[in-house]
Length: 342
Image (cartoon, rainbow, N blue to C red; front, top):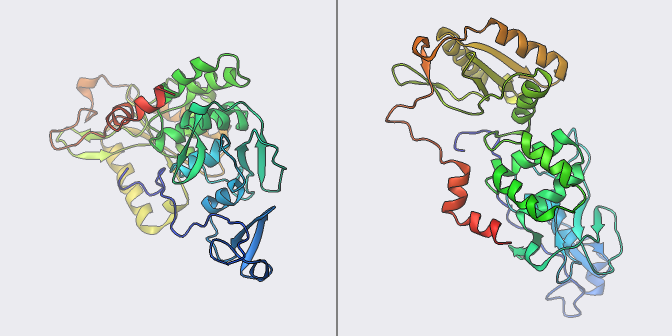
């Protein structure tokens, strides 16, 4: 993922603080007097946290989870964020509203603002401690997130962004559903698996591919696949590439307006066009119908050349190091064994 500006993998920030109980000695928590000062905040009955703790989604997760007992866990988007999924940022559509932190709690915890409590079954094999916090396993958290979102495209985005964060592959998530045949939400999750991708690096990229397939009704395209000229030079790694027609598609986010990035985008588009490829872009604010029509028109202009007549190739030169496939990475790091033995 080196060089990807919007990295789908994130690290937990430093300085996070686990809320604490009152401590008469003021060592492991605030005294009663300290708790009433502006240096401490009440976060839950009997729990307090320093008022100057970090303002970030990870701290919000810690604040919500402080009351959890043995066998309870953080789940859905919050568990995936805690494990490093950058696009599980705890914000609703549009990025303005904060989502409540989802918890599974068999104990009789009282609901509080900023969190949701589920009494759903949680097997002992479906949670573990990660950096001191009880969180649902990746496959359980992702299933809960797909169900929480409750919609096909949003669910496909959740699975794809978990894959982008290298937490799980679409195939492994699909296999995990075999053990949940009677669970509410499994039919949706199975549909989601058919649309999710291991190779998309951001939500806008995935949505572009879904528009290509479901709205424009075009054959599934490649995602983030390196394209070379016949001299072995890297032309680019398009967000979307149709090798049959010879079409490149790119999503241009806000940072593409910056002058250097825009200059690079124009140069790359020229390279693709100079080698016989048609090109379209998608920008924020375009509706699905407009994008689909643009895609359809672009493909109608494409040359559909046979491989021997193309001025480009997907076959990498000897100097190019192929990215490690996700399933190979998960196997090498032991994640496959962890995911399939739970």
